[in-house]
Image (cartoon, rainbow, N blue to C red; front, side, top):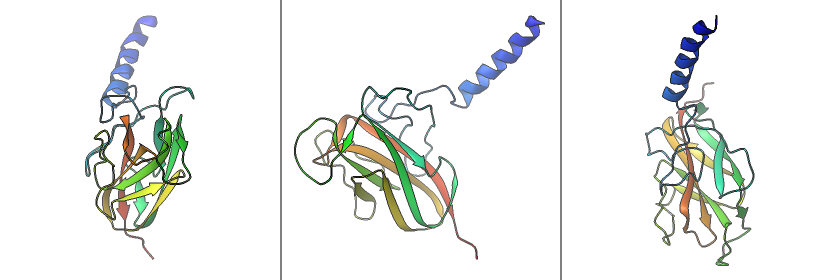
Length: 174
């Protein structure tokens, strides 16, 4: 009886590995700073498990919208989970480690050059000091929403801490 279980177990493990169920993606910068790899616009991010502990390096995760999910075009709110990082209430240059902001991006690749502000073209980013940002008038189509934890002067953490989701916005009916 146990001999019949082994092939099924091997098949299950192969399927888990193929679908990415047991992998930790590495974001730009070469460190596991977040649970998914940042996606290129139109590219694909790789979902992976959330860390189980509260200790460790700063960490960010988009909880909504869901990766590869369908959303209504129009207003889209990105909800974010942050660990081991304190959000500052306003801009500043305190230089305090692991204190800063979230920069939200739509359809652009977050910048990761150390010491260089991560801001991109107007309309492609928002600075957040809380765990959500809302995009207005999102057109139908495939979009990449990314979030990056940044120092309070707007420069990326080293290594960068980024998460991204690809979603498809559809025109609202009715």
